[in-house]
Image (cartoon, rainbow, N blue to C red):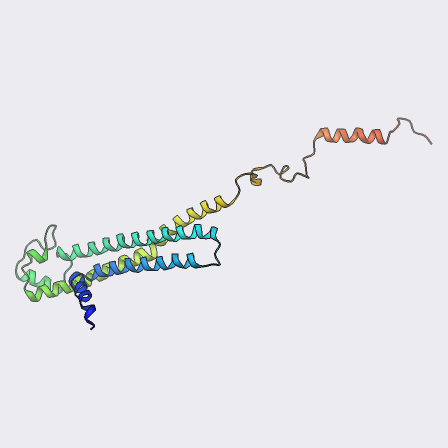
Length: 219
């Protein structure tokens, strides 16, 4: 391993060695940020997209990124915290650790306020087994949270926000005046006017003036 990588590797081991779930959450957030930034840059440098569309697409992409990142972090962190609490309190434990606690008559296992690490009187071997189990549960709950976020919650929230922004964008592009949809069907076309009784009477008298008739018949 190159020497310049050792400080980074040591930092990762120190901060994430016993907390794999935390590493998955942070790397997931970093991945979302890089992916969204790449998408925004791609829109900005694409000459085939009109400038007016870019003014809509870039803020929309940034808003999507915010929703993705926030929902991903909150949901996965909540799921991870739930899993860690279940394990730390002793409600969910591996078989060997639970047997050790029972054999040593440890009280209040699984109850509120109990902590396996501080109150379980674990031996170094049991401590290793406990941490391995907790890391596995962190990965399980973090993965479940990421699936819930990326496939269910985030698409629903993101699509709702995108739909509202799209409606506003379309409304800004369309003229608000001369909206023919709110006009009478007889007034939509200026060359087709609604016939009135006055027009009919005027037409009748005008024809009489041009073609006079008589009450008596001539043979």
